[in-house]
Length: 114
Image: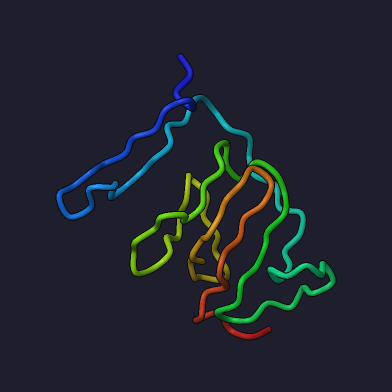
């Protein structure tokens, strides 16, 4: 009755601790709202983003269940995490953490300045 209380974790012989983990979702979720984007530093006045740098997105409705890359063994950070994704121009941003009200992602290195 409440799939958000459950997840799927795929184990393989190469990755006995878990190769893939996915949170189950339930019902319709509200549309996300983006309020602000800044560099991933403590100073909210730093809004200039640079290719390869980290950014924090603030808003609401990004995901129902928080997720991060704790225990991640992949070579590259995923461009989608718990249903959230970020695109700048035509490039997908690697995501490090997603919460209902924030996302921490890397500005794609191929993003043009300006």
